[in-house]
Image 1 (tube, each protein chain N blue to C red):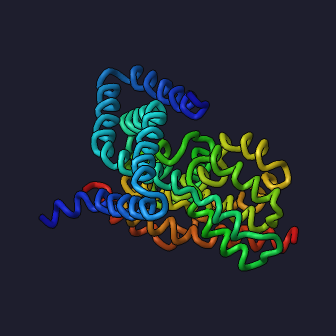
Image 2: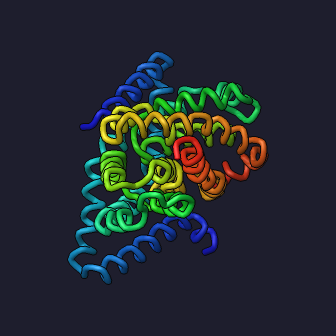
Image 3: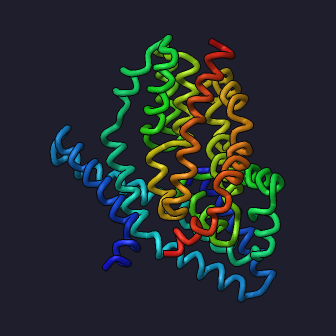
Length: 180
Length: 161
């Protein structure tokens, strides 16, 4: 029983969020909009299926291709600053939303990447994101975009270094966390 | 099909070719791993996307427009961080929203805070982070990240007023 709950804890959590959002929607606009929200979600999922498929395949091939000793050497806890910079570069260049890069980050975590490296990868994806850049320039303009990049440019590597220093030793616990 | 999808398919294609060069065992293992990940996360993805749908419908645009005014200073930055966390959707949805905000007279510092907060702290993203990275990673990354939008906003405030 306890192990079932543990296995499905994230399902439960997401379900609770859905219920809360459903009730909020119902109170604000009635049953029709609850249905619309539900359908909207499925519609977006359907639209993103090709991207999801590509992301899962990338994650799968990456895991089977890349030898563990390579990951440990280049992206493991002992890879140091070199690993963190490499992760930033990868994160900054990889396209797609969270449903695309988290499966890939998860594959790296399973294969032995260190915490600092993973934090740097996700943060660089979020803050450097080269694929988002043209859109940001086009819609928000040059001033905002350049200033935001300047301010946040150093954050991904710094966050990686900081996380590795403070929490790096917990990577085993973190890895166990996904091997449910 | 958008460009992200095309680029990611190209990456998958290159990795497939590499695996093929290594032998059919590697290709099979890669495909199997992809299938396992898909199977493990299919239900979670459906749940996560239903959340995306609801947030889309509830659409907090109005909140955004009401809460960050011009010259809001520190309070504006704090509010901007919370708003950034709640903004739904990808850059196609969020950037136009932020552009409207800026045109309406929101300061540069809150705008930079909103962009940064949406990038690193988005609550919606957590529904995808939890299944693949586990709650320990998510808690560590998200809590360290809380300071980033504040730092960006304050830096923008000090540098450019």
